[in-house]
Length: 494
Image (tube, rainbow, N blue to C red; front, side, top):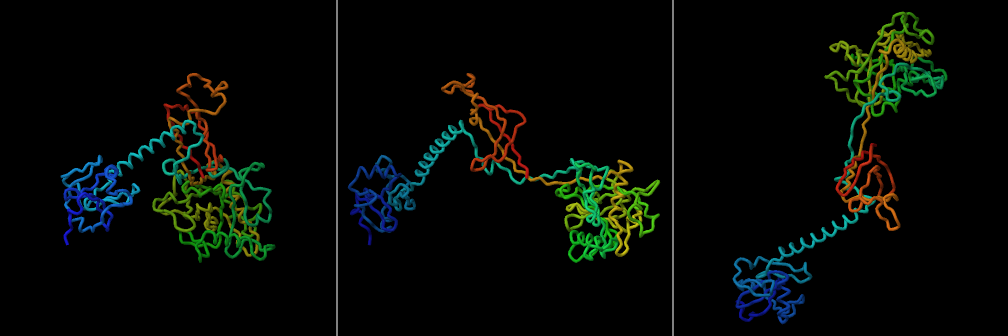
């Protein structure tokens, strides 16, 4: 059934499906150009009932509305404009809900999104300008500035620092001592090496001897577990992979008998620095003394002309990247830091280096041959073998400064960088009483009027409760004024 358009002449129409509103004039439908057009037209024609209640609006179907030809628009002045080609379309369905009204548009309606966007942007720009003005006003007397997490804070910055291993970050140690403060009982297990005999000296490393079956030490008074066996077991559990029972060296030999150098953990920091470690050993007099009595005073540097061995790790070998395990593991070979590995095509292997733990393991069989250690390996006999390694190291140091022990450590320092940005309008006034004078708070310096100046000397770091956590001092005061901006980077190390 065709719709009677003549009956709708001069009426306001809506569709039941979408509540689209338009008016019919001269047999055609006219939509509204904007919210202003709707408001102006509804005020001028109250009889149409174009208020939010749509009291007098006639309801028809969307199909009937589509059959009414498009005529034009109602402009912002409430005038009906005909023949606006392409402006009015059945597809232009608009919503006025953003303005507190029921939906408009549909057949003959006009899309209001462009007008809404323009008004929204105008309101937003006005709001931003107001906030910016408030920010600038507040900045003039600002006491705190909150860091922006993304632009002002750079976290987890890591750098590796290498320093000397010994006291006061010294890279060398040219004299070594034992301590009377160490108990006799503990000396059955290890000797602690100090950098002096005065009360201000500090422990640097310790030396020990271990045997898998407990040979070379007495079990008396140790609950039937000899010191050498305890030492070997401790290093086996600490350094070897599960299931391994003996130390195996690069030349394929395994040993039940080892010497150990254990650097003070606080001095190692993260790890020993591979390639920057060297020790020297002096030849002992063991080859001239029966094995079972090579203890106590019989342990001494061979005279008159002992041989000396210098040992390094093989991290400088371009074909060696360390083996996997408890940190990297490098081989101990004869050589020097200055000259590298001796005979690199066929090096002589003395032991293993565990940089992450600060531990050196030496093969006693090689030391017996090369340095006349003559290790006492009898059953249930106090061989005091750790003393042999201490004597060899100290003897080399005493003979020449060229045989000083050399070592460095590596520490990974994690930092957070804070960028303190002081803009031109900020921090140009001071709470210092000397900044003003008189009862009304005039500037003490007349030149400050219109151009105040301050000097930045300290950065305070606060938490959200305004509690001072850290203080950064500048090397020299930095002048601040309305014509100067300043960027200061504060680095906190952890």
